[in-house]
Every structure is written in structure tokens, then in C-alpha cells.
Image (cartoon, rainbow, N blue to C red):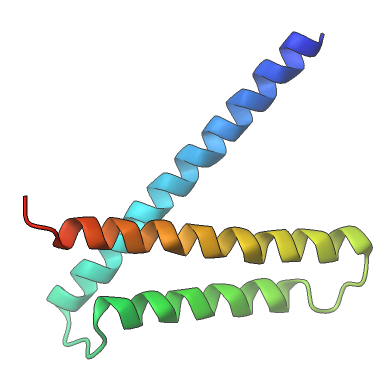
Length: 100
């Protein structure tokens, strides 16, 4: 049974990692294409910072009225995970700026 649980956990982590990668690429695409398609005054770094702030506010507000210990832990973990996620988006944008 332990092998089955380990396999399921591995599959779950792999799926979550895939979702995170896809969303990071979509964020980077949106930031780049938004600048090209509209008269956006923000540069990519400013757009990314705005997304970072929106996400932080959402996570803080979503859990703000709940006091359950696990909810606090989940919020803190989500806020910490968001930092890594936005670092990934920054890396994608930076790699796209490098000449091939």
C-alpha cells in the first residue's frame, strides 16, 4: 500500500508542478503581449510586480477572516509559494530577453 501512496503522491506533485509551469508561462506571455497589444505604460518588471501584489492581496484577503490554525498555515505557505512562482516568471522573461 505504501508504494501505491508514494506513486499517487508523486503523480500529484508532478501534476501540480506542470500546472505551475503552465501558469508561469502564461503570465510571462500575458506580460509580453499586453505591452505589445495595448498602450501599456508599465514595463514587464512593473507588470510582474502588479501581478505579485494582486496575488498577495488576494491570498491575504481570502483567509483574513478565518482563525483556524491550519488556515493560517495554508495562507503562509501559499504566500511563500507565490514568491517562488514569481521568481519563475521573472526567469522566463529574462531568458526571453537573452539573444539566441
